[in-house]
Image 1 (tube, rainbow over the protein chains, first blue to last red):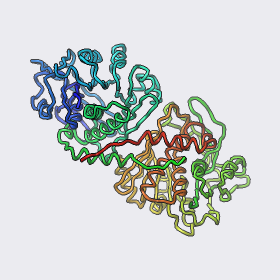
Image 2: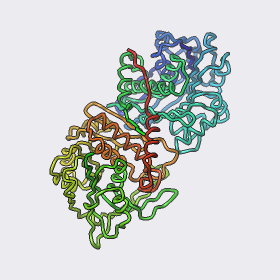
Image 3: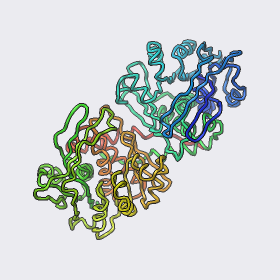
Length: 309
Length: 309
């Protein structure tokens, strides 16, 4: 098993849906990524920053799963990153009510020495400079660098963003953000433009409509599992990415065929995330539940057509 | 091979996109259904109505494919059904500019005698009374009755619509229309409600986001093929349905497993439809092209995960 290093936000989220409100709960990309990846039981560390207002209990959820949290800097008298949002009846729509960067505004990441040679590196959505700083610290170039980003960095740090993108293997990005990044409406063309930026694999996330994996002229599609109820979708994209990197680190196979499997595992884990507030469902998720749903995933998508030519 | 009977509109369409305009071209659900189903070379007839303004050339496209058009009534001095629409940059959005029912407003369908015992019956989107009239004429209950409908009939002919729905095996319906029909936002719940109306298989069409097949508690999903360009999507849903019934008539297997294959064939054919105006692409579509793209479909969706428990 290879080592997995994750960098991303560790934060408080406060979420409202038309039916319910969460308090200040465990949030941030790195938490979702780590909890999802921990299903694969690979050696893993996380690099992030919090204030001393961040509960030890939340960190313990990671530590209990064997995750090295020594790379999470705790800033004395600092406040943790905070995001507050409200979902509409259509869960594809949400309003951000509040974003407080707090300690994340001044973040100099330090990779724990034992993970400077991690084989899989997950650069969660963050300032591209922070992503670069982590990448530059690695003593060996990881076998697989996966990066997530968002439209904010396209608007504010374009050149830095292009610099990181040109150095990663996999970019995961929303459909609307892929369009914004490339000014192409067709997702096929958008993926081609992104590959021209230097990325080997492009994963376009379409929320409830699944995800597309592009590599050269190859395409693979994983649907989202159709669920009776979506509680709220915060963190689903990060959970998806966590499943991908966890599976890759576990299997040490970075081929397109294995990326397909990784995408399916990611989509499978994401389907749990949206069943409860925030990370709640991921914190109570058994291996058996994961496997059972993976079988549903297989039934959902697999068919047998004889193509006699 | 079983016989296939298709009822639906045969019409003129006039289509605008942000980039191009068609003239008055061959349109109507029955034309798309027949052209798609003709790929499977099953004995097939179509029941419809046109005015004597409808070109013989258009009918010949069906006749050349061995389709029995004796059930298409030609009304002397009548005008054929006409639909005019304009697509936006986002091809999921369109405005109807003009709808002239013309002869379709007074349509009493007559099934050709040789097809009164057809095993597969496709009730294309039409007034539910017309759909019922056809169903009632059948001397043997077909092995598979597939029905398509739209929101207009929910608003104007609810009771009749429920009567037809209760007598069919498969309902194909758009996602938004499934929600309207059932007042359920979740498509899983909507499909369950529709099955409670008496349908065995529910196919929910999500346009570029693929289609879901529900049967009891089983679900199957077929994506739409990601294309570089969508020219315009008129008739894609009917082409999809045509692929389904053509394949079912060809294989004479009405199991869930075979319905899955039928859905894949339907989605495959629909991916061609949207490459040109109206029926243009379907009129010039070789068997080899269909098979080649079916292989792409397989590559797009098939994965191999070992689920060691």
